[in-house]
Image 1 (tube, rainbow, N blue to C red):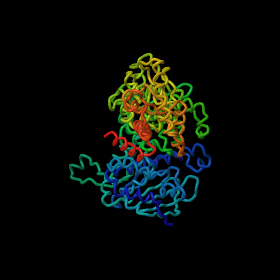
Image 2: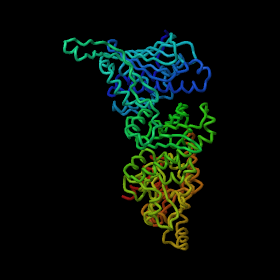
Image 3: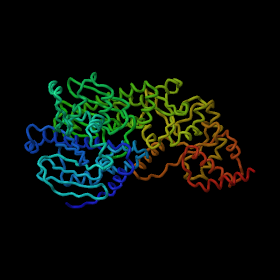
Image 4: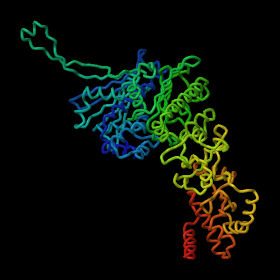
Length: 637
């Protein structure tokens, strides 16, 4: 057999498996049985759609998993009659890790061995968990429709052997030579039964445990009286140790919470119970069953471009795919579960899925079911706050992407607010109910830091007028998405950095008089600041601060475009803000008419820079800002 080196990342992972993730070793059986079930799913599909594969299989073929153990040999063997692997598959599946699985796994590690071991299956690295207990592993596999089998062998240190071998039927045999200290625990009937019952009870295929059992002869009453000694013999047993039913097809009334939770854990590789379960059976024009779960914690790869979708598609209990991202909208990519249709063709392709009316109806109805369940959760404040902590951002994406359900999604999103206590959030319905009916707008401010936003000079006029402002501190998404919401129940969303200041007690005549009084200084500041600002003007939106920066509506759109380009790794020049100055502030009144050009210049730049800092923006030259501040301070002393 030829020797191969493990991919570097695999070597790192094997080190982790053997030295760090030691507290929950039993999950290696869960992972290997899950892989076996996936392999049977794939062959079952091919058997129904590929005539060549069908002809090569026995007519009475049914998928199954066999587990055997040998106490004397200190070994455990897991066998499936699934699709199998050829040489290329073995190298791709075991010698390397696709989609940077190891890197993501390592990044997600917490340092808690038990928690980290539960992440294994979520990153497509489950096979390697076997090296937590194994001193050596042989994988013997033959791919359906091919003539040659292959044997993969490794002790999990740095290399593996791979070469052709003889194997009669398709499928995979995994022989695990247990470490001495692990054999006593895992080469036992009761331990294996317990682990399979815990993690794999609702795998859709039967799992059989083969073992030898000592049987004592049953004596008759007469033999017992005569003192005859009962004979003891060793007999072979082959016991089915799982339910092997498609749980989602069972009536809801017969299923218990524990059964739902156990099935969720088997398909999601999660150690926690789900936050919500949504089980639906639809009959009529389209007949289908869905079983969806909302995880208690957002999937680790949720914001990765190569995230793994969590919903599996079945047609009449036949597995079709678990890699189709269009079964639900992308903003619901955190949902885990099953869709099983009675009406789709077995040979459904990705193109057919995207255009199929049946699938479109299932998708539309499924979205409504999930959103209705989330709405039910929103009635329980404590439970919903846990949901919002994990998935609020995804709902925001949905309100932007899904026009059909936009209103329902806006009802579900929660927002930080200028009036909300720390740690509390508000809904749009609550915002509107608390507002003056004449307001007719939902005001918001976007940035990266909640504390900075809550103390922004731009809020001064809104606080003075008792107007609530939504605090959106996830700038990366909020700056792009929020303007696209349009309106909620006819109330428009308005960014306070570009909106007109709220009403103040100032006549038009007084306003013109103030503008005229400060006309010279605003022109002078604009000349000093040049292209650093698009305009300088007096404002009545400030009560305590000397200045603030805002943008006009056109600049707001450019800012959104810049944020989108930045997300794609492309640079765009920053849009110069408008500097507004407070004519009632002492600094501005003293600046007006000051006959000291160098001091006017220093104060003008400080007014701009401090306004930017108050909004959490970067200033162009921090050193120059400090020097100007020092010169101004020195003159004041």
